[in-house]
Length: 340
Image (cartoon, rainbow, N blue to C red; front, side, top):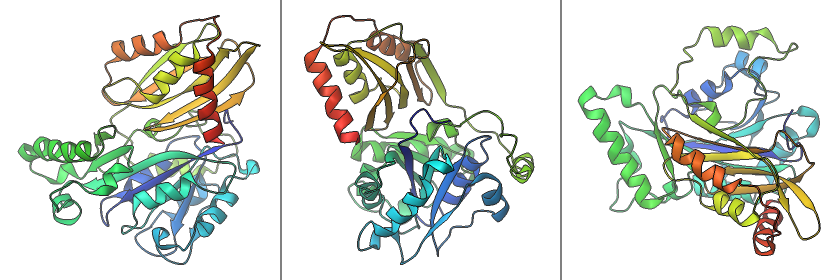
């Protein structure tokens, strides 16, 4: 069960035609135990296996009326999100797979300002075709504006290049992305195999008893190898400084931390309050929570982390503090209000 049943992360999956979005999506959906809803266009290159949809996805929702970025308003998307984030469905996340001509900047804005109360932004994942990228997407003097919206950029199809070209191509793509968006996280993928922990939380490590067996069979027929993300877990042993916590949320540890999640208690001038926090790229989500001593703390997730340095930074942010911090609490409350 999700720790925050009121808000479901909505992830935008973007990429140029043929970049490998559907391949990456299908790989994500083979994660055992994760209940994921998918929003797709009713035309275009979406081709999720019917069996996989039946076995893994509560209900796919189709958006009609053309490319999402061309909708006159967010109504079509909001209708789908209203259906998929209903509490009775118990979904862990919703993925919006955009058509190949969709603008990720516009899609991110549609999710950010969605009228559905149970939605929170889950980040933008942009899939790049390493072979064709500089002939189809990045063709100007300045890096594409789309890179500014992406928190996670998956450089795909590197395996189609000659071995001696792969590192140079990845570096070239990464440098262009970071020139536009210094806080983006750029990772190399092969056949769309990306660690789902970078994108969303899995409910559990195995399928629940009532899960249709077809999904498990499909997983057994697929290659599940992927480069695993690093995760650094640090427990909290009491209330923490609100200022140090917000400093961490607003500026995560350098070197590849893409997600931060957990439950943390903060002392105010009147009492101790507990919050659920989720950071995805540059998006910070804060919600109130019930106290849960013994399970409070944070997990930082990313690729190729300097584990010692990340642990030191998170540990410093979670140092116990019984001194009320009015300024830090005000900053934390601001994020909570924005998250609502």
